Image (tube, rainbow, N blue to C red; front, side, top):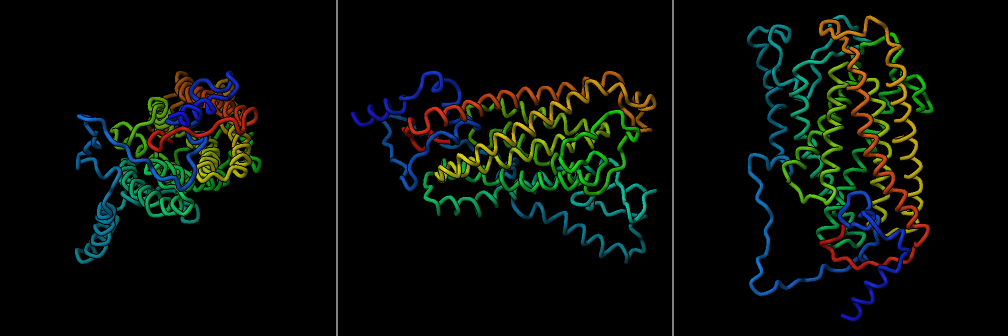
Length: 405
């Protein structure tokens, strides 16, 4: 008991202006992983419930939504099997794919090719089939998440001495985040390299509303697949969160707000043919998230020197992508929106132009809300940085494994 009291005093032996606020919360998704960790290999202490105490059980998940966290592989196989059978059987009926399109194709193939595009430069437009693609890939990402988390990340975590179930779960989450955002960040850069907004320095100095080629309704195949894939990922993340399919964090509502604003931006930019701006915003979010997940993983395995270097790099990457570039985008939306051609300043479904006067605020408001969330998190990131510089060894770990992030 005396040792425990001494440890708690040692934990609090930090400058008072640093050891305050949410950055000391082990359950916060951003600050929690950077608090000191329980020594690796430490077994989870057994706890004896008090007499008459009721041991809580995990909440039951309805079988109708269980697929969102533990999807059976057959859900993904059924559309593929249906597609192959359709392709094999329809020729015997004397029908071509033009006469009777394969109804299973939109689940995993792009739909609505533009008939006027050439085979050397194919283009695709929006279609109702995109909803089938998104629904299929929501299940796909649920399966990929389970595979990466359990099959890949958990064995790696155990190899480095992580034993508690709580930390295994958090390590798996960040491992999946690293894989996803690293892949999507690199893919987003590749997609941007094919677009008129590309600049080798990624400074987005060509991202201006005064461009005369709006609307961008005919998308390159890779841009459309990239956009719909991202939309599926964020829809799956929001679904898991709002249905409480996983243990919620203390910053639950911050993350829900972030996911809702993200889907708002993604959906509207896609529907309003603003995919070039959407690609730029996507990339500015994905790249720092990959660095962030990597720094968290290093902290979990207690590679302290590497963690500090990774965190410093992350702060620089976050500052550039999530603030500098996004403020440039906001500036462009606010000051250059009125420079668009008059032919685009109308809501015309047939022409694919939707930039009526009020759309300026529809674009600016969600981007601003996202930036406000990022600024709040940036404040916490800088607090972590100050704490690391001002008191790098003053904080010891006194958290049980079920409290640790």
